[in-house]
Image (cartoon, rainbow, N blue to C red; front, side):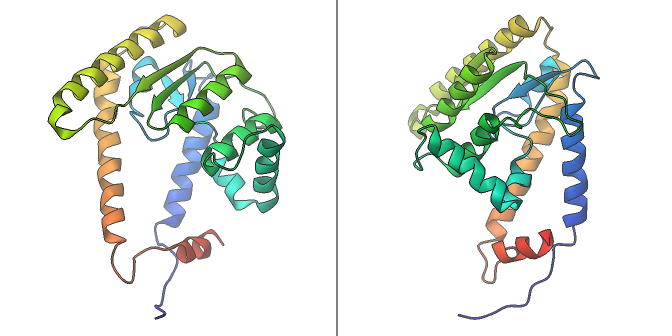
Length: 224
């Protein structure tokens, strides 16, 4: 197998800076009078912003856990001990494991913050089941939006169905938070979400090249 030279990503320092900002923004939601939402693995991330909510999927500590072998093993062992098998994807196992281990909602300063609600998008069964497990653990409002797998011939019907559900989700968020949804905040957030999706798609396409611009080995070097 051919070997190619590589170097750390020049943008890695900026990436870590942005991630740290997101990290602290998430913990300071209450200080700003915002809500904290769980769920939404890469789906319609702009939607809760209209209600003044910040989200971090199921865990703000995911990257930290993945860098710490002992912590990572602890999360998986915790899930095993509770009867959740290895057929569940590692992302969900790690986040739920951190929840059961008690540090999922613990801030860096030591306080515990209970999320306000869970909003999940049904892209896979495990994803929604994990949201249900989190709901049972935290005992907070929980809502699911189904993203149906429909042929292109019925794409228009799918769009109508999803839009209807998104509208229902908005009304539900208004009800459980007692807040009025701000359409302008949503309109500001959607272009940013789509820009990030487009950029990530381009990265994936570029990474099909041989040699690929980025690799697991490159990521290890930049983390070090």
